[in-house]
Length: 79
Ligand SMILES: N[C@@H](CCC(=O)N[C@@H](CS)C(=O)NCC(=O)O)C(=O)O
Picture 1 (cartoon, helix red, strand yellow):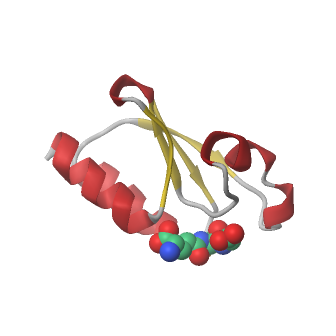
Picture 2 (picture 1 turned 120 degrees about the horizontal axis):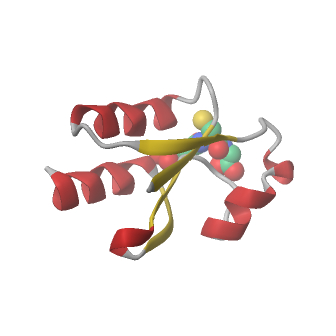
């Protein structure tokens, strides 16, 4: 199952969620805390603390950051 680490109200996260929805892809969400120094789970999967972060283990994606990269990946893989 795909997983998305996101922060409510984050426009970069909303862009990725829109793309996932447009492509009809299911995913679990993990809402992170607004304080980035407390985002231990995000840091552990992606090595940095920004969101969004996508996990898609079926395709070897263990923790992809940067919304533009995630959108491009989703288009390349699923569109
Ligand atoms: N260029 C990044 C920007 C993402 C970004 O700024 N996310 C904010 C939340 S809206 C964040 O997590 N900032 C904390 C950080 O980057 O450590 C992207 O497009 O993914």
